[in-house]
Length: 428
Image 1 (tube, rainbow, N blue to C red):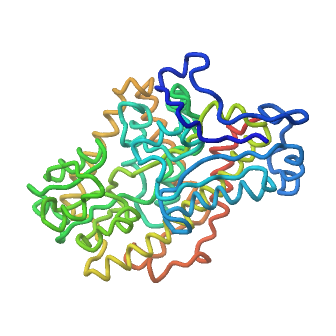
Image 2 (image 1 turned 90 degrees about the horizontal axis):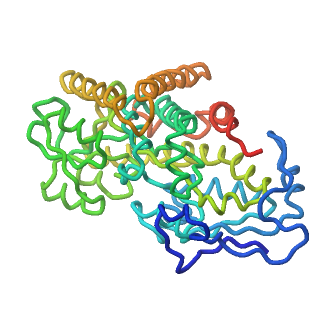
């Protein structure tokens, strides 16, 4: 049996990965005919579940350790559950996941380290918290201000174009590999960022001199452009800070606001489809040694079933959480509104400066070319979403009563996502 177990006691710095033997491959391979560590036969793209199960017939069982940001069975972890369940089913149970819930193994700023040192085999790296460690990825996160912010087309567009750019940008892929990480699903998001405020605020005078908690460099610049003061407040302390008036607003996603109870004390919400706040994104990564030790068919299945990750992220998490958030916002006397014209104009100008500044960032290589790719790819995916027939039938306020899973057929989008973004990088 090949078991990718937690490598307790094996802690190494990312830079030490270049030293041979610094990090042992997870687990140990017990005797078995032909073995199952690396190589082997694969399957063609488009293989059925039955074909995959047949290909796994002689593969030894593999256990991968991961974690979910939420509790078992909750909406917040739906994308993890969807992905792991699909992989387990399609492998006929030969790949299983040991899932720790509520980030029990590593908190958000430690997940990359946990994957490298063996506490996790695969997990969701949040580069937004470590811009110096992931400078190229952080540049892409800053460019997320270009994303469509609307409730349907925005979710689809903003989950596609950054992933497209990431996997086609060597500097982004390499900064993960240099740390001993295999980049799997890049730049997915949990929904748009919003401003959650204790009092209604939409125009520049409303924000003047106010304090807003922010979690990204781009967010700092956006808040400053509104005339407010950006500040850093731990997510776990945001509720009390808003309740006591220490901060006036908090910039975070509806999912985070819902989980943290922020809506109860700050129900006045701003999301503007035409003036995007930096979108909070994650990157699913795997221990590179573990990845390279897997048989080819296992690598292919883990890659192919990223379609379930995308489906679970959008249809299982973002939209249901949006419904819950809108209902809570309305329950506590708030509503979702766009910026007033003066604030929108100021924010759009700040966003243009944020993107233009990326051209001077050496982390992305040819910065001008990178910015051109970012803008072109964002436009491309806006066109694809429209081409596939997706529209915004309602705004955020009406979404809670309008939405049901049968209202939106996400499958054409997921198939296009895979073909355009993931298929060119499929293991072979």
